[in-house]
Image 1 (cartoon, helix red, strand yellow):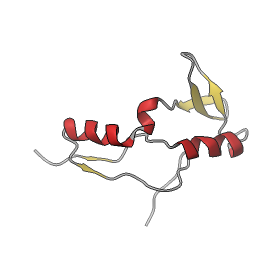
Image 2 (cartoon, rainbow, N blue to C red):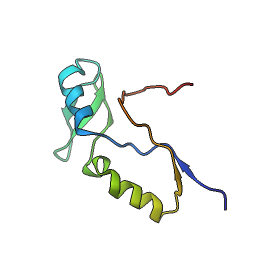
Image 3 (cartoon, rainbow, N blue to C red):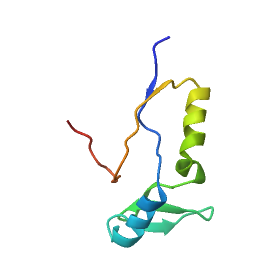
Length: 87
């Protein structure tokens, strides 16, 4: 079986959420959604709902190893919705 490279894990950091709270403005506000969570919105449309599992890197990496995602590439450093990795 070919190796799996997981590049889409939806990981978040507390610092990133705090930056959105402070600077997300009308473009990327955090708003309450059904179930008592807050979602990152693009204007008025929710597109990512941070859940506790998105903040637990060791648990996420362990889960990826368990399901066989042996190779992973994750973006470190500043995050931005709809960002593009180039280079």
